[in-house]
Length: 244
Image (cartoon, rainbow, N blue to C red; front, side):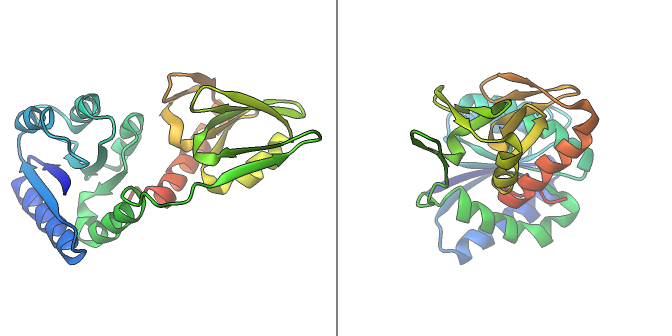
């Protein structure tokens, strides 16, 4: 059974969201357990004991804001997917550090809920998805790796170093521009002339640097910050969906 929680201090919005979630999963014939909360204190007390797979969080709440709740929630269970609900588009950037599954503006809940949950079922709950691979033919060998395991690529003229999630790395003789062109549709972002980063591992985008999920800090082209942020949001909308 899929365990879901919903937290919103606006009781009217809470009822609307609860009804939308229940209706969707009932139509899909997917069994769920849905807990609804209007108090972040009560939610956190329950979340510490329950293993929620998906949590909908309001951001603007008087006791504890949704960003702080999200941090505590990830501490309990890093595998929990979070979907933020808010009227404020500017807050989407503040949620990036938590890598939410998505962000839905409250004014579009009715229009976007079904399509968003459809995406969740087809991606996060689909354990049979085939992993895409990148294969590079070199003079003496052919190197292959799962794209989702490549955290970032560091450039050094004609040779590029691939850094993988498991801590391993390998060098390949290929131009950075060629890699950028081929990997862009898979969520790789050129954050600096010497670095190509997999969006899955971006934790924070700062003024002149980015931080990865393993706390590795890489330089950011400050002149392209806005463009890079838009690229991140674009790939997130495509692959995980942030509705604005």
